[in-house]
Length: 522
Image (cartoon, rainbow, N blue to C red):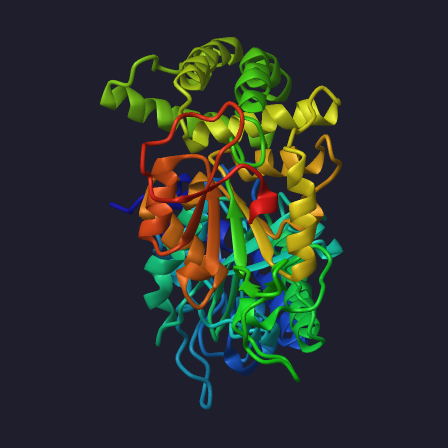
């Protein structure tokens, strides 16, 4: 009995062979050969390096079930022809392989990137994945060999990366290279999981993997990534910092990099008595109770989100962001139900209808907000609701009066400032993008949220210090109003200051941390 293969046809029968030799597969084969020739001229797949894969687009077949084409391994990519491509099922079974060619060609072999490509298909529902050995993608990972991320902001080409705008900080995870590409699979999957908004993973001293919903999306993003890497390298050669909004001079001490004529010393500032006091290389700020009154969050943002959940979901129900928010909430609620979390109720399946689904979500979100839960599913939805409020001038971020002056001062000194909040990165950018003191994002180098970890867990601060690439964790100053967060950060080796602001909660007696009432005291 013939096995049932992809697309509901029997492998080995005339019908399956007819599909494999049909128009959709042939056109995809030819397109891949054409793209490989183009990528060779860009320097992305020279020396037989690099690889590409695409799904066979067919409107009659659901995307997760579409055939997968992959380029072969160890061949001259610029000389490949349509018939050189492998055709695979969604399970990874080879349905069609190229015929051997005479010497000096090697026997055909499917790309070693196969398991990594399939991870992108499985975890991101990709339509195409490109693996480039472009020199820019290799060198940019070598500038700071300790960094776990590449970060860049305020560059026009960032807009070509899915989900990003000019003012956003683009973050690309970096994983360590291995002797063989298939050995990257575990760390590659971990990076995809840890960076849910990423569309690429860099491999140190090696190259980059980029995926998109289609081959056009993957190609466009690949071009933008290589442009941004090249820009970062050129800015570095000029002594300019690509990761800050104004791309000012690199502070060599902060980055662990020396430029001509500079010594690798700490950023310093003069005290009023003439003594020299070293500044931290990086400052990480909490928001609620630190830069912003707790009352703004509890009395303005939370009620706005709670009151507009149903309206927001109804108006945006079929958009990609809302669909992603609903899936996150479903997963969180299912976990809550299994753990017996109070207030959790089942969210009806999609077949129950839009109104039923929204009603179930509203009940759960209301319970989550009342419990002040610091969970990604809630924070992502809140961020999207707040964006509407800011866009409609119904919301304005509030910061304490001493915050803008301090940010400007630290920025002038070359100290990089980051935000770490339980609110989503989007919500953080919104607060600082439209405040009672104007747009303050130009002073901020990046944003961390709960995707890096819970704020009361030491591991989260270890991840942040590794991401920032400092020589030692104590090069980072963390400012928060929460004692448990301060304790966790201190355990990770960070310097910590407690913020005392009007409306903040009480602190334990003899908590042991330096405390300030204004950023001017830092």
